[in-house]
Amino acid sequence: MPELEGKVGIVTGAGHGMGSAHALALAREGASVALVDICKDQQEVPVPGATETGLGKVVEDITALGGRALAITCDVSKAAQVEAMAKSVMDEFGRIDILVNNAGVCTFAPFWEISEEQWDVTVDVNLKGTWLCAKYVVPHMIARNWGRIVNIGSIDGRNPEPLHAHYCASKGGVHNMTLAMAREVGAFNITVNCIAPGGVMTPMFQWTGEAFGAMSGGKPEDFYDYFNRTKTIMNRQVDPEDVANAMLWLVREESWTLTGQVFYVDGGLKGHGTPWD
Ligand SMILES: NC(=O)c1ccc[n+]([C@@H]2O[C@H](COP(=O)([O-])OP(=O)(O)OC[C@H]3O[C@@H](n4cnc5c(N)ncnc54)[C@H](O)[C@@H]3O)[C@@H](O)[C@H]2O)c1
Image 1 (cartoon, rainbow, N blue to C red):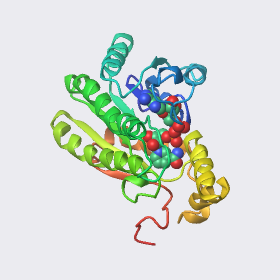
Image 2 (cartoon, rainbow, N blue to C red; image 1 turned 90 degrees about the vertical axis):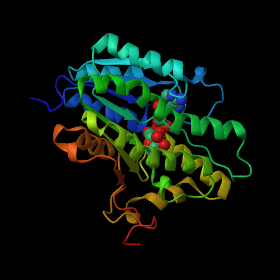
Image 3 (cartoon, rainbow, N blue to C red; image 1 turned 45 degrees about the vertical axis):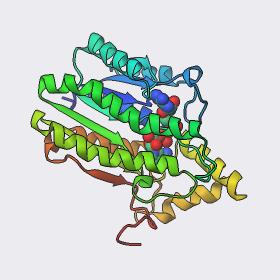
Image 4 (spheres, rainbow, N blue to C red; image 1 turned 30 degrees about the horizontal axis):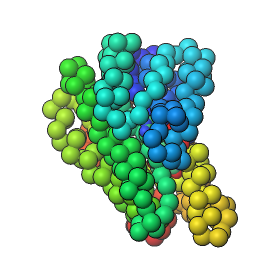
């Protein structure tokens, strides 16, 4: 029997990139999955990452696997929408066991040129959105005395790169908040962990390469090369499915010993404060 048969998971930012890989991974293990993403036209301040939702395709893929999927349009930075999202999942599936807080946005500028809007959107989606989703979901986990929350941070939460101070601040906040949350819900048999990816080839990563190239006068390839396989001790590029595998490991029943941790899923990225630098 698939390991997560009967369980219900929510994945935010499920329309693209790593989010769709997380959703498919949960479905392959037998979980029913609520796919949460924003539509471009809902975004008050247009930012890369908030693209037209690709949820329909992910629903099709999960249905083709024989799984159950529910697509929900929701801006994770808006409390009323997140509360309604959690209610929709309960109405459809009757329980929530797993939350993967994956939705995120990223823009680039020197910190003295970051606009207030850019700051607010980045911190609101990446940090506040992670808190809001956990806030409205965790009561349903507490009610069943079981839960797994996986927050997606970033290598930038530990080793900030230049030109996105707002993003680095938001991800550092996600890492630290993960530890605080874990301490509060352990008594309810709920674990809270953070996965901090390195460079993973997704729409966000591609856009990042283009932005860096435009700002530095270099080529996007130079940026990709910075994170590519020759820069990891495993000599491999990390794919969305690799990050999803790490997520699956954390949501298993047997993984109850793992909580309040930040796991760097980066193939051993060199130059980021790792012991082998
Ligand atoms: N790609 C990388 O190299 C990398 C590295 C480290 C961390 N991360 C983090 O991993 C996560 C996934 O990134 P990705 O590379 O797959 O990005 P992506 O841009 O490909 O996907 C992000 C998804 O989040 C959605 N989204 C944006 N704003 C939203 C909002 N307000 N409400 C709901 N959904 C919203 C987007 O529509 C998109 O589907 C993000 O949190 C990102 O910060 C990515």
